[in-house]
Length: 419
Image (cartoon, rainbow, N blue to C red; front, top):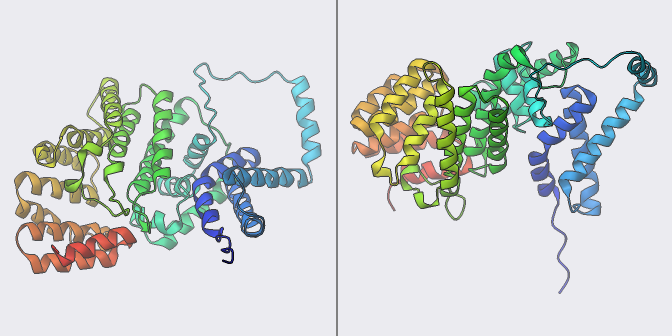
């Protein structure tokens, strides 16, 4: 029997780069102090892998290979700069004659390149939309199309935001660091939003063949935990951590044997991770203890997730409390997506007709025009009302809008009805 040809390493290259690129960009950015150049150097390492791995084979530690290659290219770039030697001499003389600056008394520097990258990309010189889009691109490794989907924003708009953001950070010489004091507080909201969106992309991927992207969830949860230790008096930091702990606890039950999505009502709750649920409860208690006013958006979402976590069966879920909490969230942070989620909770607490009335009121909302979950929710409510033909049409429409292959398959199965 003739030997089988070696497997094409391109898939391995793409997978490893997708997982490792945020860490590579963050590490290189610390060297070159420019996130745009860091991303280019990471891409150079990818090109090198595409050239060498098919010939030489995939290395034992492909992530370390990519990191080392990118770092070498960063060092080469620094050395090629015309004024490198002169500046190095000047810095040396300065260090000999100048006392080191004192750090703030409350300094608690974090040796974490990924976290530095988040805070750098969330600098106030950028718009809120640009901060989140740039960090999702660099830290989350998301494509422009995936970010556009997460924002319900046209792809060209997101692409322009990212390009302009990198240019602004470079031209303004923004330091690659975790800020201290008031400046850190000013960037916190955007940082929390970034972590939340990264987790969501891992929890329910907007595109591709996989429903879950666990590495993104792990990165987001890790960063949330780091922030909780960094800012113990910030209730929304603990609240976000709580929310992500609760959501992550369901991961094992959210897919079937072949990776297909499993709806919440069909999940085997014995597969929910009770350790993560306990961590979520603890973090929510910390958020409550740190709060001095009305609960923030993440505290409300964490409270909703806690209601699900406390129910050992779908039927035991306290939908009345969840509907009330969504009402508070809609008042605190109004958005069409929150209102759509409220419709689901109302339908469970009061009946599908009441939920359908809320959904129908959202039909004219421009940002939901191409949002597949709007017809998906409407299809579910119509099915519960016995309006089968209308429900089928909504599921088919939702499948046409969905960009994740697993989700599309699920919606088409629901359109086909019970087998």
